[in-house]
Image 1 (cartoon, helix red, strand yellow):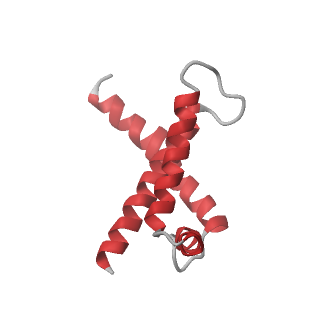
Image 2 (cartoon, rainbow, N blue to C red):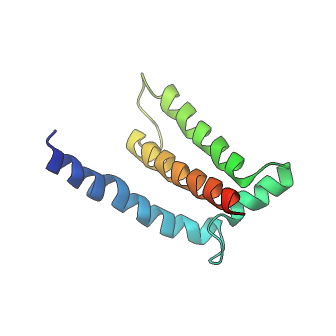
Length: 102
């Protein structure tokens, strides 16, 4: 794959859709004032940091990808799972960044 094609793929097929997903899902999962609120609430209930909740969800997505290595998915596509994983990595990064800044 040539670099320009890769850059176009990143923009149009990975990060563009991920930004849309975060906008739509963010509405349902978090309050407008704090994108990370659901991770903080769950973390508070479990006695762990919000970043650890994001880490957990990253592991769930990785486990799903591992499980699908040799079979076809019945529900969401492998590429959708990869996008979700990238989104959780971003949320983990944001959580760690905020925790470090506090």
